[in-house]
Image 1: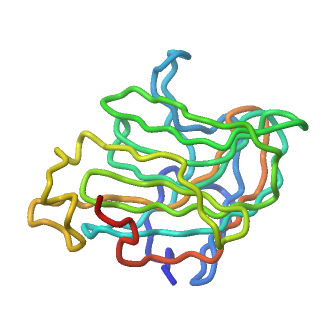
Image 2: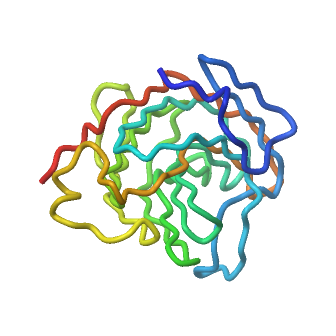
Length: 207
């Protein structure tokens, strides 16, 4: 188990509940995380609850939701600062499909990598760290996880052979803030509930 009761908020929501068993976030309209690319705008007003770790880790959480409008989303987040962060979620598109994907933001520019899927009511995410590199996976049953992407956060430094082999952190390894988030970029509101959260030594094996 991982306990978020001592976590820190970015843009604490008006309605939330945090216990040793779960985190619940009610979104507010016009909230999002995005930086510049394609749309030009910069948004950083979504609620996220974070904990810190210098270690390599694997963080797993189940999130349940009932989306209402376009771009409603909830999932996992890494937040270094407003120009360097990551998020993984399903974003609501329409009644036919939604977009399972992730955003990596380096040096103030966001990307968005997605695949179209039928909209479920819940999903598990598993995030693993090895130094400045990360693996994000997803699962629809909590048992079989599929890779979504491997990514690098530039602010955490360079990938090295030693870093690729390490499980304990290197002496120069930086603290990372990570956790859960939910938002509604359009005129919407819904509740995201995060359960079955665990924090373990890194399960992402060295190459």
